[in-house]
Image (cartoon, rainbow, N blue to C red):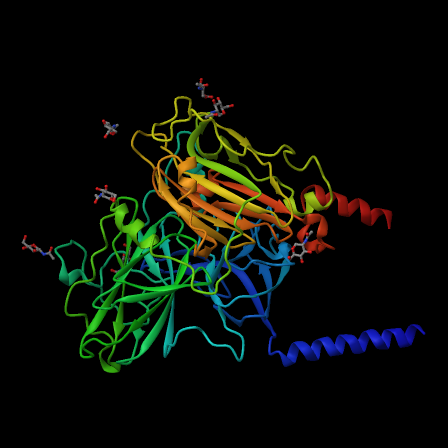
Length: 577
Ligand SMILES: *[C@@H]1O[C@H](CO)[C@@H](O)[C@H](O)[C@H]1NC(C)=O
Ligand SMILES: *[C@@H]1O[C@H](CO)[C@@H](O)[C@H](O)[C@H]1NC(C)=O
Ligand SMILES: *[C@@H]1O[C@H](CO)[C@@H](O)[C@H](O)[C@H]1NC(C)=O
Ligand SMILES: *[C@@H]1O[C@H](CO)[C@@H](O)[C@H](O)[C@H]1NC(C)=O
Ligand SMILES: *[C@@H]1O[C@H](CO)[C@@H](O)[C@H](O)[C@H]1NC(C)=O
Ligand SMILES: *[C@@H]1O[C@H](CO)[C@@H](O)[C@H](O)[C@H]1NC(C)=O
Ligand SMILES: *[C@@H]1O[C@H](CO)[C@@H](O)[C@H](O)[C@H]1NC(C)=O
Ligand SMILES: [Cu+2]
């Protein structure tokens, strides 16, 4: 009886496996060691946090529907680690989201954690460290999901390139972190170098010879760790560039000399194609653009990346679009495209306002169940400099929320709901009269399957006439961006919200003194970070946590729980056995 039942179960399992195999989806296995090693990302030797001796880490390439399995071993010796799969929603696997203190315990030195999750949607994604400021240390790489077998992308291209953009400091992340947490505050400053696929040039310029700048012409042979990743193309073809930004701070603008770009994808969702000469990309975002190689093939062309939104002190990141196989090192005839002025926000807004969902993409629900307004302010706390949301600066608890909520551990974090809005008399245009804030680690508990609106409200920072850009990234969901506006969000802005074809994304910027309206459905049981993707800002408290439906989860893998109060709970359970 028992045997026959076992047989039935076995054959059901075999059938399931066969079904899975016949659909072509499979598991992609990776075995990674995270470690520090010496590297010269910008021609200056430094220490980077990389994977299997590579910086940036290896690219994951999968098909929609595949399982990705990453066996991650922490070889850092003196600190924990986790990796977040940015843009992957983790339906049914919230413990694999890779956020320390939120979805799992940090992986201790010497320990291995297995991330196992499904990539359900084709698109351009990336992964990065999400513990402390490890993304700034270089822990990142690309994650590309192709359409499943038998399906086609809704546009044609002959070849593709993957461009992962980042910014780089010579000062160690530990030094940066101590500065941010010190009294008086020490800001990290602007990056030394912009990197394209982990490569940039600090003390020389590929384009020195076109300008009067003091930097010297780089003399690179092409095999150096800092040599630019040349884009070799053939004439009269269409190429897809997959561009993602994992910068710690910089908002970027990317342009290619003489070539228009047609934007077709944003954050893993198709958009209505539109052509631009240059595009803005904020930390946490990704785009696919199509370019046609229809220019004079005897020439080469610059691809340039420059800083927006902060007065730039960093030279452009550069590489070359090369048509002719024998002239890869030939410099383009003219100077690199000029990055728009850093404070030309109209240029940025005009780009952002061109992005709409492609036809056939899911539409938002007509109404919302709950609206949460999040005021972004810069504050003081006992003399320390912080960022706060509705006057709460986030400090993560030692016990990850996912496990503490599932197990009803009420002492693990503040049980009251954080504020849903801010006082009406707060003047978003003026620095605060009383700049002091509080800290907290409460959670916005969302009803399962409810529709949630978030109004991100920007404000003046601590100094007069200063309001900064903040790209907000949501874990576990895509949201619709219903609109952007100036000043304080008001009921008359309500009518202007776009419910017809708003783009679905996982990252949305708020412009200085502006607001951004988002809508999403809380349909993914788990605990999810929602935060400014600027690494030092998050470190200074600029984030919140949402949670929904955790009671619907069956079992959370013990390895995700082995710390804090859930760790203690496991020990007592084991003792009873
Ligand atoms: C860049 O500067 C570093 C440190 O000053 C030096 O060691 C290195 O040789 C320089 N590299 C180039 C390409 O000039
Ligand atoms: C370099 O300086 C000269 C003389 O000051 C000026 O005419 C020229 O436009 C400058 N070139 C660039 C690329 O800035
Ligand atoms: C930006 O656009 C706004 C609204 O269209 C306009 O009033 C303003 O003058 C523009 N600013 C600049 C610097 O062009
Ligand atoms: C803000 O905090 C500082 C330092 O804790 C304190 O000296 C100051 O009085 C506070 N300001 C207000 C208006 O409460
Ligand atoms: C924020 O909290 C601090 C400390 O409780 C308080 O002094 C301050 O008035 C609050 N500010 C706002 C804008 O609510
Ligand atoms: C939430 O919605 C999904 C999809 O419509 C449905 O399968 C699920 O049962 C719902 N869950 C709850 C708790 O309502
Ligand atoms: C801020 O801007 C206002 C209006 O433009 C101006 O009157 C004021 O002097 C500025 N303050 C500072 C500190 O720059
Ligand atoms: Cu920010």
